[in-house]
Image 1: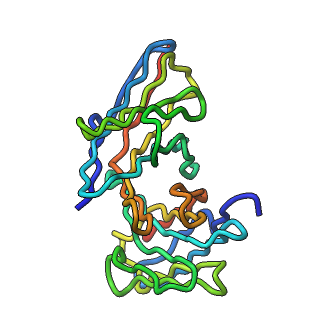
Image 2: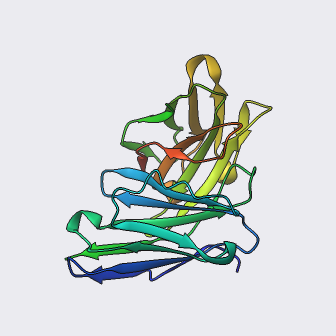
Length: 113
Length: 114
């Protein structure tokens, strides 16, 4: 597609439930990032995928968070046993290696009640 | 460790006035520097970036930024603010030579009033 697509755009879930957030990067982009944007917390790096290399998971805040990228394209961020502090906007970005600048999706706003 | 500091979480200017959003970085290796803009309920859009070469970088919507190594700064400017410039602006830094994880500042919300 023309841009990075994220779904759903909004998600309200009950505390303790699992959620899956989806990111469709721009076709051909080898790099894919997930960031979290919380009110008053800025943008927090979560995870980075680059081609077939092992992902950099250093930003995942706990073992309740995981992500995968299938076939070097679509990525899914999974949050298990959601907590209220997980409420945030989750942003995905993709780009080409070496381009040093990425295209962001519009994000998924997650609300845990 | 690399970090980014944006001075002023909120900046307010009059329409037609100079816009100056400040960004300072900390990096042990040559940095790549970026400014992103986020309009309400939208994702981040790249305004401009500095990687190598000319230190004065021009971006979209009339914005520009200058990399000053001696001051470890990458301030964003626009000579004349428009109402449509009201948004949140993020400065970011990444490594050079390694993979390019972006580290963001906390953001500056720009308000433009008539």
